[in-house]
Length: 492
Ligand SMILES: [Zn+2]
Ligand SMILES: [Zn+2]
Image 1 (tube, rainbow, N blue to C red):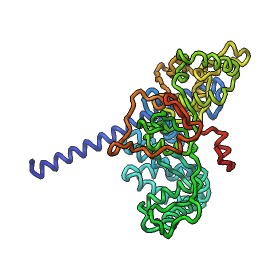
Image 2: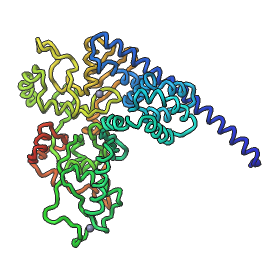
Image 3: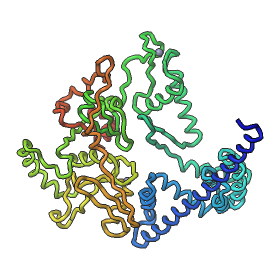
Image 4: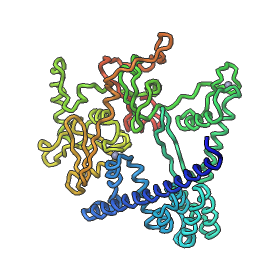
């Protein structure tokens, strides 16, 4: 051990270096952001010139950056937006960032707090806030800046509130281990009302012996408000629970989600993970829980491959199917069956880094459909249809028309290659098959030799589920079924 003076000197040197590195990182982050916005301006200009709509021009930049840096499109979008704010509205903040006096977290804080400030207020306060941020952490920057804004422009308060309220939203993001983060910005009174209601339900609808914490009950209450039951059911397990539901227990609405799961896993013979569309892997048990109230779509492995080559013993059947399908293939709109299958196989939008579920995506003809002469163009088949969200559908259409410098190439095995104008490329594979037809069976979890899966009578009883275990089931609710549920016709 060195003596105290030596330790002090070492620690001081470490802190000094830490400060220098932190500042250097900020300088580089500022440069990175500036490069992103420079690319954005370039692409936007090009796309406006070739007639892309004002609102959509430049939107492919985040995808392009995502491919080049292997970052999510969302984080590229976020940095571009922040960078545009620095360029247009926050010059002092931008300068402090470029010089390494403030870091990215403080840039975000400033941008957030000033986002609805009027130009007058910005003129008065932006440089003051930027200077203050050099000496304070993000939370204090926000608090003080908020106070200054109110002092500088008391009349603008109502307008700022309206502008802030206009940005209300509810969003969910996938989190780990089968959970999601649900976040929302609501008008203050509305948010308070939601929280108050959850608190009431958490305290009033279960007895003191309910095993859940208050936080857990509030979370369950939110789900109960949404799933149609409208109330918490006490989990104390006592017959004489004073808060027991009188009469019939409320029944939860069927899940409006799409889950891809292998038949073996659904039946509890395996515990392979399942695919929750737009989310990713969920565990077998959760998939079976969701499946209990679901509709099924059976997806077989043979027709899911690119060319759908029939197996020897399936030839006769396949011939019959082919005759009926050829008429369908020459129509632009896919049949409901083909659409469901193509979406089940793709899982989500096939652009790199895009999380939009296939159920919410367009089905795009990979080889272009020829409206004038359907025989000449790409067919409307499962193999020739791919899921694309709106943004990436536009990107692909521009690419096909040689308008944006991109190339989107479809390989016969359903891989899709996205080549950016600068020659960077990324290949995506469909998400569904790994889950629907797992190559590596995962044995079921057993407790004392007995499979831990709950009984699946409810799932396997209906006629639909009389199935060969080589066939695969796809939990799916179509838009039509969803509308039916909304109209209150819950017979599915
Ligand atoms: Zn109870
Ligand atoms: Zn997409």
